[in-house]
Image (cartoon, rainbow, N blue to C red; front, side, top):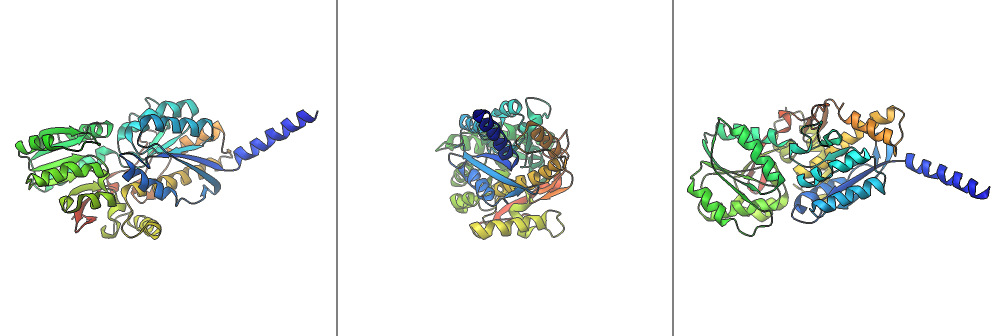
Length: 381
């Protein structure tokens, strides 16, 4: 009888613990080649409020070291041992794609922090019904790049990008956006860990493009740009939104001055036109973030991580309103559905309208052109 009583008491205690708080698991690249991105995300996560939807929240943050297999192990631990209600992260496309099966197995929704739309498209295939993402899809950024290149009168473009899932996605989106509008006269690839891109740069230069796009993220994008400058290239250099970190400016120095890149509004918040719908949210976030980390430290990646909390807060509130309790499959399934019902939610990087057909939710208001000017990221006129 005593054993039965203790078992019953334990069961009630566990049930109470499950329902006591919303548990969010996070896997980000705090170390490894993508650390410049992951650290920014982690910094913002440290500032998340301790509630979601008015309910107490607990955050479990793990480092995947920019390693796909470790990202998968992290997510398996978070789902099976920690019983998370929601996953945020990872930062790398390959990692996000690799964990889709785990999301399906455990019925756990994910708000990823990657750029590639391949994580959420097509939405009804490969477990992507459980996947959402904060960063603007690459196709939006690619379209903005092509429009800017055309506006500035460029006709021939050279391309060099990462030889990985991120680079593949960018090549696919940029070449599609440029089709019939620009001529891509050279395409080269390189690894994030390469110590030289001289061979690729010489091939790009031999094609004599009006402008060159470097499709990468973080500080490894500096290498081909420095090499281009050292070899005397005087055309316009473009990068993707993946460069917008203080480390890019520090490592790049004079070699990255004048770089044009598409970005979310938060990166250039102070120089945005006043009429931009996300300007106030972007400024508010920058003030909060920089109070902890210093002037001009807010980035695309920290903004995405903050936006993930705003999105989760909104969806969790609606899920709790259904009378469902955290720590249950029913809660996670309802949360997944509520995420795709998000309407007109303003975050530092734009305005979200998520649907069952679009698990990202941004439109053109989430993209502006930025420029490196006097060692800072500013709005490009």
